[in-house]
Image 1 (cartoon, rainbow over the protein chains, first blue to last red):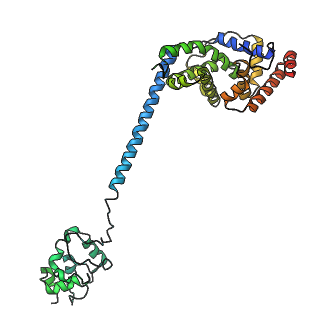
Image 2 (cartoon, each protein chain N blue to C red; image 1 turned 90 degrees about the vertical axis):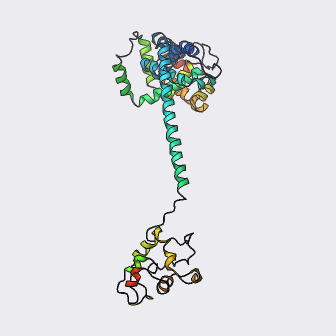
Image 3 (cartoon, helix red, strand yellow; image 1 turned 135 degrees about the horizontal axis):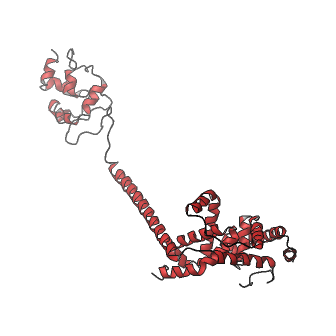
Length: 181
Length: 170
């Protein structure tokens, strides 16, 4: 051992004692055989790769799920049950019903609810929930134009449309029983 | 593969060449031969799984020594578990009876702080300069000099050796 870096003299008793101590430890040490160490190292390496692979699977799986959710999310705009879609149906050329008046929305079920209605021009005493639930039913939109006036009355408000239509066009059977009679 | 990572034969040759010397160095740092053997072996196990990094190191022995030291520091917090592990494996290999001088020196080393022991061992056993010790330990050169000076003074006081105290005074 060289003393090139030391500021101490070569006969430093402390340095000699420490070197003697280290040399005694070297002589007394009983290291494991090299194949044992390499085998343990190989197990550690495999375990590390397994952990990394599992982490990668979790990372990319989670990222893929997030991407799929992000792609599917904007297309699926589900409106709440008590609100209506302000956009008209693409197939119907009818006037847009007033979204603020839920009780005036047309529908066969609504016209049958007030059996004792004295006047067809008066709004039926239906609740907002029944009208809104009828509006959210997509199966009703194709039947609605059959009971409404022709498209010439498209500028009329949605509030007036169903009840005028009820007086000018042949109403359903249920409307006949609950009509002006 | 040889350019990026050690082969098994190269690694085993490096192990056989350095393990005893590193054990002696760690023994001076730790004051416990069994612990020194254990952490040096663990450091070699880690080195095998990181052979690519080991090749890039300027001094693989310094890398092993640093890893072994960190392992020892970590084990100080769980010494009880380490002792139980030794007992589970049938105890440590029998070591030769130490001479009284070694016992006194080891006890004096145990009176130093861990960083002082490490610095003293790197300086006197591994022949590293203050700058090299600072680079290996991540400390400033001033801190290394302080550890060396205080470590020497504490050892001189504990050993009560007039020659050591005289050398320290110089």
